[in-house]
Amino acid sequence: MDLATILHMQPEVMLSFIIIILLLGDLIIRQPNHRILQFMAFGLLVVHIAANLTISDEVLFGGMYHSTPMASVVKTILTVGTLLVILQAGPWIRREDTRHKAGEFYLLTFSTLLGMYFMVSAGSFLMFYVGLELASIPMACLVAFDKYKHHSAEAGAKFIMSAMFSSGLMLYGLSLIYGTVGTMYFADIENALTGTPLQIMAMVFFFAGLGFKLSLVPFHMWTPDTYQGAPTPISAYLSVISKGAAAFALMNILLRVFGPMVEDWSLLLSVVIVVTITVANLFAILQSDLKRFMAYSSISQAGYIMLAVLAGDEQGMASLVYYIVVYIVANLAVFGVITNVEQHTGGLVDREAYNGLYKTNPRLTLVMTLALFSLAGIPPFAGFFSKFFVFASAFHQGYYLVVFLALVNTIISLYYYLLIVKAMYITPNDSPVPTFKSGPLSTVCLTVCVAGIVVLGLCSGVYELLQHVAGL
Image: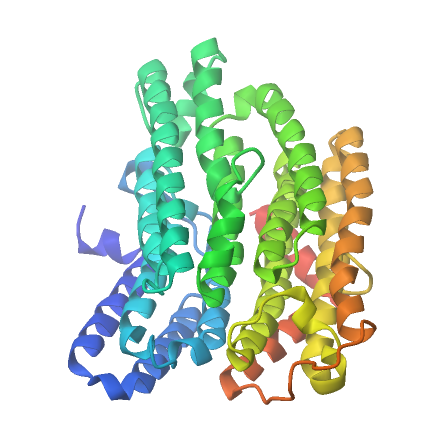
């Protein structure tokens, strides 16, 4: 190994330098000038995205690091999503009680992103586990960022305890894999797997550990409390960026490592998908707190994403990445509206607070409506096509019953998404949320999200491009 080899890891190396620059900037810049840090983080991330738009196929360190063309695309998507979260977090990070911690916020956020990079490009379980921990530990600090608020500290404690348990469970499964095949490299494990009971148990433990990260039922119990207690921009980041990286990593490992055991994990995944979507939809109906509501919505969306994993082919891979893109813009649009309303109403996140919102804030209401329609899968918005593609990919592989049950559940999800639409447009309110103007950064974030919801629904070339990349 030499310096030239490390430089081939261009996205990881560049993001590491950005973290170092922000760390030095946080030490040098005086606290009242926190806006400088914000513009530094934004500008450096834009440069990072522009410099890493190329698609690479690198195998380094004997196969421990493997950056495929699709992995390069996923890294770019995750980075763009992180950029949107930074824009969305602008009003929150400028609050009196948080602005002195702006540097910490950017350092922790970029550290989790670096860990997700390693998860996506892992060619060994050792590299994957290091990336997983690098993404999880700073995330726990972000969840507990408002440490003097009881719910934030409680959410951070619940998150780190769940992360510890899931990581230990996964590590035990990985130890069983190493004990049976004698290697941690994905390519070597695939050739050595024979489907013994011990290997099946190892696969189940690995899946259970990653199921916690994806909030799949029955590993989802931490999600509503964490989303409710964490600062809203952190809940947004946790719901889309973290989930997107975990979903891609799960599909990549199931196909590259546990391919010989496809009959075993496909049955397990089919049951988990149906249970996840059904339970999440039923509990979402009962929620009045919008952050808890979005927690159960994200659990349900994770179930739909797993349909693409179940397909287990190039079409499934393209469908999964397309779903992640659409899910990022739609979910961040919803959280963007929640953040704005929360900032201008003293922390109101209850659904009743949105009664009559259309009369005082019609633009925000329109953004929320389009995003909810996309999440519900109503045409012609992007969410309809993302659901259609994952359903089609699973259907083509013969999982007819799973697809049918998922389709039935879309009716339930349509009902609870429309409850919010009804509150904003129809339900009367004698004292609705007062009229306010969103900040410029929030406006840019919401504009990009709305454009993504509309354009991704009308432009089918994005999915075709992803199919081409998946075939490289």
